[in-house]
Length: 193
Image 1 (cartoon, one colour):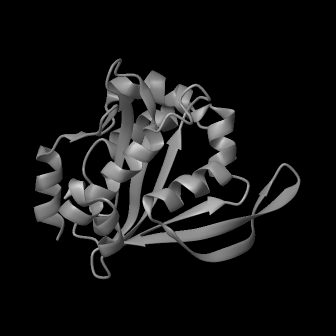
Image 2 (image 1 turned 120 degrees about the horizontal axis):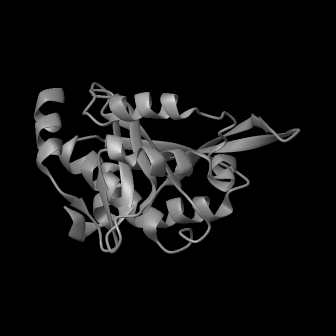
């Protein structure tokens, strides 16, 4: 599976109505650094660690190429090329044809405009059509109802609850596990085959 999908992925343009996805580039360092400093993005994703510029530069070098177990894309606004966030498939399991997905959009000015929904749908299209996955799953904290609503709108189904999975700001928070199967995605998003 790896060689065929990595070659295909390197050649396709991943473009939505308002956004496009691409691999990170070294020239993204300043924007990526700013993105990782966004307190609301960090809260919503449960990130509690600060990263140095050197750590981020090393990370960009790692994710700017195709890896067999993950696909990391930055999300850019088509009109301006502004970096909006990232969408990532990781824990790619080619035997069981599954992977985990995560997304983060920086800045309140970019949230609630459909960019995250568009990026998720495009990444799911890649997951099912290029990588030939069967199941894509995610984890979302219960204090993020906007994301839960978006994931359900896209077609994700709740599969379980991990109680007290995150300790942040002196409180424990539950995490919901959700997943979408390839046939569920295809039936909801027929035009994206």
